[in-house]
Length: 172
Image 1: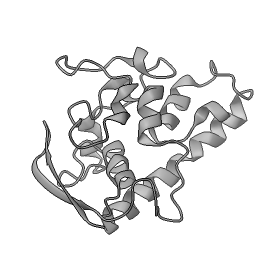
Image 2: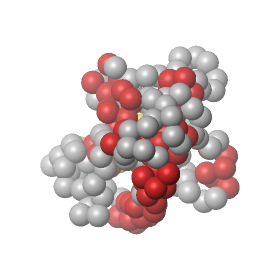
Image 3: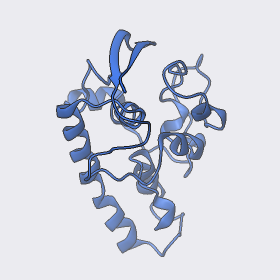
């Protein structure tokens, strides 16, 4: 299986990648996200901003119940997030810290995850992003240590951040 994908959206023109794995399968043994990209979009992440203009790249089903901010408007709306709080840093911060691979995923981690989930593999980038994902797990310990189970008023920003990283913080 090897399917060619050509991307033409607001941030990438003519970017080509290949899907070499079945959708949602054959993940790195160390990468076990709780949530799929579709589930994340339905719950409400990133203020409804991410991948709004990527509807030709990803399955239509991902967008059917997604909580998205209107594409024609700049910015985002934290009320679209599951925990109704802003838990994002601007893309400029991510770029400054070197967390963005402009060639492959100029929108950052979630774009990488969507493409990885679809079946794209870029060995060096996958290793880097999985390492970052694993490091973010430390926030689960903080929620568990400081909150009663399922007390969603406790640490909502941290819980929202966990959702942004495909950890289902509703379980803790």
